[in-house]
Length: 322
Image (cartoon, rainbow, N blue to C red; front, side, top):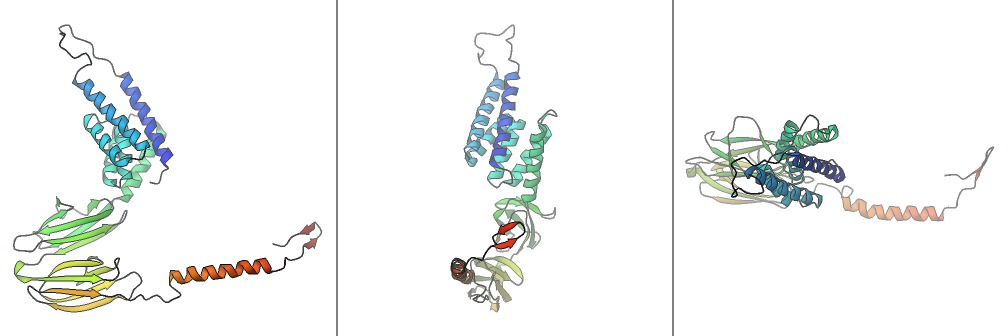
């Protein structure tokens, strides 16, 4: 988070106090003239629901104070489902942000700003607006292209409709899958950095044209491309159409690897890409760590052994040379 924990907890405490005031200010239900002794003494279902929501809310705030975000999220979601109030929305957003669920945090913060009273603390409203801006900037956008266009697409197991623009996702690793009758299923794993925009491309292969390709790189973070399409990192298993293909493997500080291959129906090929480090010894961080230690030691010795310069005399007295 960009905001200090003390500020966040301070906001939660302010909302907790406001929730407490709202609860104490709620008018008690008066018994009707025809009430019977069988009526519950603690009030009606609304009172019970309010009390249960408040209990889950208080528990969630205490868990936030303890930094137990996952359990806090569970309690605050339960409180929201029982009785959604601005304090619940605000603290729920804090838990969602801490767990990297920025899309949900955006929803909760918008609900808070929509439902909070006009008399709310301006500083707290300002903090919510800043949190909303930061959470919105963290959301990732993923463009998915698939062939054939009639294929059914899922992201993290949930069906998605293409053609309505980029799909908004939280940062992290996601799985894009596609299926179509008469074609082998396709799958792509993508890693999305905070606030990034990426493209996932899947080309499904007819079942009577299948060929299997495995690409293994000695550099786990290397990017693997088949026919110009990024298909993964480090090691990938890809279904390709029988025919000619080009495999490219690119490492962050390595010479690129390129191989043209011919695949046949039902064939399984393994391409092992051994990337060579293109950095010289002077580019290696270990060189500078070791050399830096030696140089630093030499400089220290020189400073210790070099005779101190005599004071410089001037009209204002003696001054030691720096």
